[in-house]
Amino acid sequence: MGKKIKKQPLTGAEKVYRGLGIGLFAYTVACAGVGAVIFPKMTKNESKSMAIAMSAVFGGYFLYCVIQMILAFRYYKKSEEFAGVGHGVVLAATTVINIVNLKFFLVMLFEGLGKTETAKKIIGESISETEYLQTLSGTWTALLFGMVAVMVLGILCTVKLVKRMGEN
Image 1 (cartoon, rainbow, N blue to C red):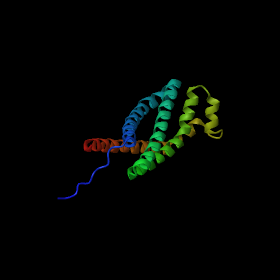
Image 2: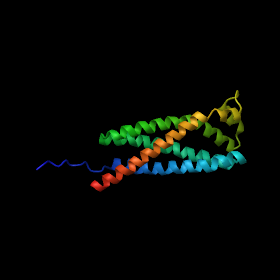
Image 3: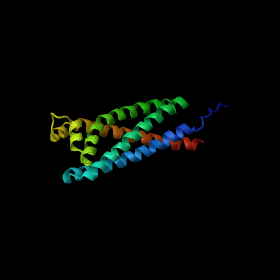
């Protein structure tokens, strides 16, 4: 008769990490949807309230990614599961992408709050707002790839959590 390998029980750190990973997936989908709806209307109407809302949505996404990155590395530290390192590295890269995009969302926030001079200082005196927007295609593409990566991690968290809950 063969030996049966005993599976490690589902730890609290893994439950928290994977559960919040699923939440980040949902928030990322919502964030992308809100951006697809609000951004065109915001630029057409030059709506200050939509600019503030869009900045707040991005700020939430940025913070959620940072928290999830920390949880991924913490999950690895507690369980020594290398998936935590892999997820943490992807989330760290996404955080760097978000830092690059933070400048734009700060400009949008300050414009929405009516602090145009502060927004111009962030952009820089030597470039106009139109020229600044034209330089953002690379950072927006990176943001899109980062969001897709976060969504893939969310799917992996869902699959793994459901599988692990079924084992216990």
